[in-house]
Every structure is written in C-alpha cells, then in structure tokens.
Length: 440
Image (cartoon, rainbow, N blue to C red; front, side, top):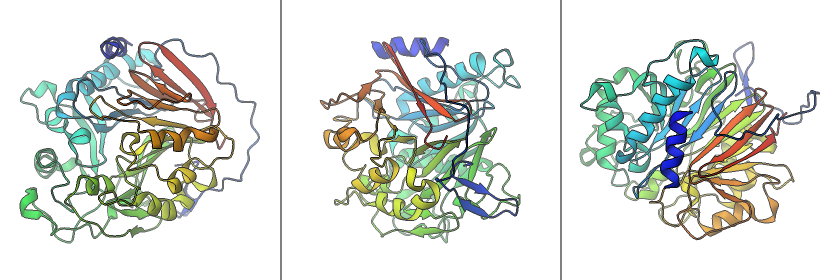
C-alpha cells in the first residue's frame, strides 16, 4: 500500500446492537442471545500494514504530522464506501487527501475485488463531530481549494452537529467555512443532526447564544442516503455495505434512546469545553462488532467540561450498547482528563474479564495526551482483558504496559464479517493483535 508506506516513513521521522423489524419498528438488541458458530479463527497475523479487504470493515486512524492539533480517521465499508471521521487541522489537508487518493487508486479497485473503479478523490461521507480547528480545520482546503482538481468529491453528504449554540467555543473561521459551504455550493450535502427554531447566520458574532438546538430530527432520518424511505423516525444511519453501518446516537447534548432525543443539562457557549460537549456521537457496527466514537465529548463535570458522558450512558446505553458495552472505544478528547469518566468507562468497557480495546487519535500538538488519569482509568486492573489502548502518537509522559504507541497509523479491521477484528499499530514497526467480538 504505497501511501501507507510513505506515511509510515514520514511519521517515523447496527444489526448487532438492534435494528428495524419487518414492520419498521426499532428495537434494542438482546445481549444474552447466543448463536452457535464454528470456533473463531482469526487467521495468520498480518506482517505488513493492513489493507482494506472486500467484505470487511476497516478503520484507519491517521497520524497527523507537525505541531498543529489534529485528528482524522477514515472508515472503509465492506463494499468500499468511504466515510471520513473528522478532518484534522488546516495543515493536514494533504495527509487526508493523499490517503483518500491512495485508497481510491490502489486499494478499492476491481483488481482487488471491489465492484467498480472509484474516482481519485471520491468520498461518500464526511462526519464532523464538532467545530474545533483540530477536527474541522482542513474542510476548506479539502472542499473549496482554488485548485479544483484537489477538492474532494463528496457524493452523499456531510454530517455535523448542526449550526446551533454558537459562541466563542467554536473555532470561528473553520465554522464559517463549513457553514458557508453547506449553505452554498454544497447545500445538497448538508446533514445537520440538530437545528434551531430559526436558522442562525454563519456569522458567529451575529448569532451568539440566540439560536440553541431545539430539535435533533437529524438523529431520526433512518437511512441518510434515502431520507424519504419508510425508515423515517428510526435512528439515522449511514450504510457501509453488507449490513455494516454508522448510527448517529447523540449531538449537541441531545441523546437518542432509539425513539426520541432527550436533552441534557444546559450549559453555555463561550468555552472550548462547551463546544467539545456538543460533539456528535455515533456507533459503527458490522455483525457482532461495535465501535463507538464521540469526538471530544466531555464528562469531568468541572467548569467548562459538562458531564455529557453520564447523560449519554443513561439515555443511549441500554439501547445501543447493552450490558456488554462495545468492542472498541474511540477515546473522547484525545484521551484527556476532561473525558472518560467512571460512568462512561464502566458502561462501554465493564470490567468483566472480556477483551476490549481503546483507540486514541493524538497529534504532537495535544500536549500531555494520553493523560495519566485517563490511561489508568482504562488500563489498570486489567479492565480491557487482553485488550490495549492504541494511540497514534504519545505527546506526554504517560506510560503503561498496555499502552501501545504506533507513531503511525492505528488500524482496526473486522474478521469474518464482524465475528472478530484485528487492531494494528502500523508505524516504525508493526504490532497486530486479534480479538473475538463480544457478541460473536
């Protein structure tokens, strides 16, 4: 995989959670259901960086260079669908663009078993968890570059938390770029999770605090690609092929219980932590495999870091995770102490002896990440069983025997259509480990 190898060199220098019944109603899954299957065998350990495989779900957490804060991931569905999960800062557009180009030209091709040849910079979906520079800053250069040939071709939609609750917590220039784009030339791609009673202007100063999120209908569209189908009213989902999907479960402090969104305790708009607390939350599923993401969602309860994680657990947990939690948790806020409170960690990774994993997207600019208290909360007492915390980089002094720093890509890929999965640190060296999915 040509670009992967170049990138590594550079760095070295919801079927299983629930679904729709035949009558169109939504139901939560029953984690106690056991299906007898042949013994799980992950196959040979990969010796090189994992490549996308037709029929399997892959997730690539990108290592972002330089000192600018940044986080970006790429989801590749079993059918080759591409969804970008955050975009990094304005200095990271080339990394994201080159990775997409490599996928489309060298990996997701008919020669490798995919159904068609994709466009060089074709992307199906972009998901922006919130409007801080390290998650949305590359949007303008990726979508509105003066060189038209360098713009991504997004074919289906841009999903975001909504143009609501505006204030100084937002990185204003990045918000303005996204808002003007999705209200202008890319209006057909606009998928806000939450809206206000009146449409806020893109100018943050003019809209400050006046346009709160009052409805989160974007969490209940059903299939986002077919918004007029008979799934309206069910949790919004992005189909990734062969039953794999991304389901939206929370945004802007409104959390879905599967049928409606329940608002948490109110908080302000003029603190970075308040923007983090409004992050879009979702669940990636394929077969028995569950992967949780939530941007920079907060849970400490301290001033500026509202405890939205506990609200998420209480409202969404029974429907979307159940008593088993999830296989892989994408750590909120780059594994900082503002997030991963005890209630949330206990819900997604109950200390029951089973193996689970955690992925942290960290750039050099996230000074101190992963922070010591967060590392201990996830890794002490063998909470993750034989699992680990996998970080793209380490920008602090925290160490632990179960913390793997890739200094490169962190890759998660399902095995046997979600019966299990590989986690791989693909940096200056390759470390891979296989796990059986909790619900296999």
